[in-house]
Figure 1 (cartoon, rainbow, N blue to C red):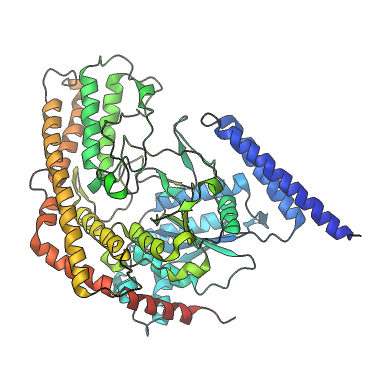
Figure 2 (figure 1 turned 120 degrees about the horizontal axis):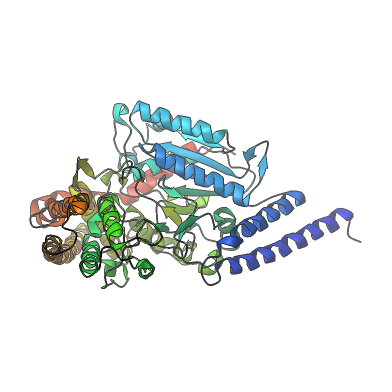
Length: 581
């Protein structure tokens, strides 16, 4: 006969299985026909009941998560991110608490801040959230330099950069992540299996739901990730983001101009005192609908203008919505797309699993054995570093590199300012915005991405390609992108001219003293669009310049030909840091 202990264990397993079935039913009802907000507390409670059953059974072998959060000069976003993490932990209870501490989560805060006063603010925030039950390892500049000192005999410059000790902050997300990954190698693994979860400080553990226009804690991220990694042999899983797009304003200007022009055309035909057609703003944005060149990534490019969803009263007038939209225009230059928000579309995580090709560096998870995958070419500080890494993973990991429907909420700007808290590459002075640096990093990031994609089809990096073949690939990809960017630029110039004419049409109802401030916002928007995307803009002059290309081609070539050596050096560094068993 089975022992009493065996019977108790079987009974506990049966209860846990039954509770999973209860959760599945709640989840179906929660999203049936949209989002049923009234069911959310019960859904969360069902998960907490599961946690109580697992704790009562004992021997919880589910994954422990180490969350890596790089941050630079962003205390408000950091607080918002950690607050959402606490809310998630309390709502779903993954791993439970003992003596006031969440048991299956460790946060590594990788602080890339340079200014001492902001470092102190970040450290105070860390202390505040430790007091609320989070285990947080503050990995600041001093700790980073100590780690680099321990690796001084290994040449890591092409992976972590060459910042001086006196100016070691502001390295950028890719180099900061690489240094944090090295730190991970020193960690003694917990008794449970480990997963590394890397995210950005401007993200939250929530999703943005269209039907309620709300941000809700409706996804049990940790339990879902644990289930996927427990039932697959995946090494790396990437999610996406909802809310603000994960790309630069440098590649969103064309379609946003469509939307702004469409908004003014609609307003011109409307009575300012009549209600704005708010309900008609509910069109779903498809994949990459925010991207001017979505076709580069295999997505359809939307042709219709997207309508603005007014953030004011439930039934705002056209005049109120006009003013509201005007105030939101400047947010575009700091990473928002006010008309093409990405909304959460529910699909269970395990049912959504599919092969991946892009890493969202602000939302991906990997097993310790995938620590060998540092972010390549980090010192170039290019945008698109995640998609570039993803193309390499796709070529080498095959079905061990997956994606799942576990997007995090991405919020680029602060309500108080309408600007990002810290955004390198965007220079703001008063009402003037300069995107030229970000434009350069975006264009060259695209060149690197599609060159790597093309080379990977030829066996790169496992197979050495000739220098002539690499140079030819870079030249071909760059020429193709120059053509696409230039064609887009011509359309933007025409759109700006049409928008300017429409705004300044004297017979339109907004030319009144009451709309003076709103018109100022619109004019500032047009001025900044002209400065960054109009005729003779610095960005478009840059991509057409043979001199700039010669310099960048040499840098890209050096990085591409050095990747295999970088991998060997990275392996040496990991081996030197890994604790002896």
